[in-house]
Image (cartoon, rainbow, N blue to C red; front, side, top):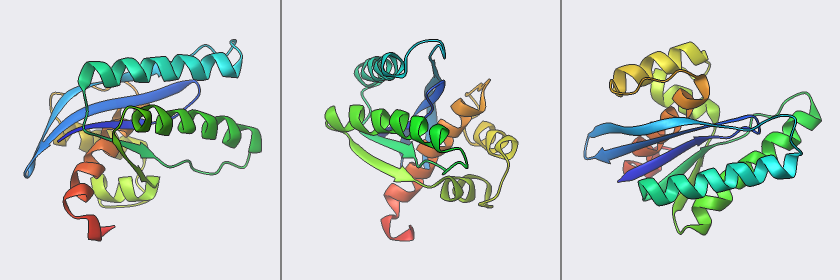
Length: 160
């Protein structure tokens, strides 16, 4: 199963592709979709959508997994993050992929064993689980962590 993991954000959307076969996982590719904060939000959302369409066409995933939004104290930030997340849900679904959603706490617990783990801990475990990955940003390692979480939970759907 080829999985596209996504960590939504209007400025930086992390993505990662892994292959899950039985009990093994392997790294395929990862990166960050960046948008210019000076551009209008609708233009930024279009750029994210186009990049995701390209990623789906290039990597041909079977499934997509998207991190759920953490509610911020700033309503405006939550709204723009929600818009980016909507694009991250829409494009894979429109492409016919099964799309799963995972809470950040579940991702951290699945990868590190602690739902309150710090981003550095998640990045460290992603590097251990996917040694060929060379993530330079937390958005990228978070996206791979979401994909790894889906690889585990797709095998054991009642564990959620």
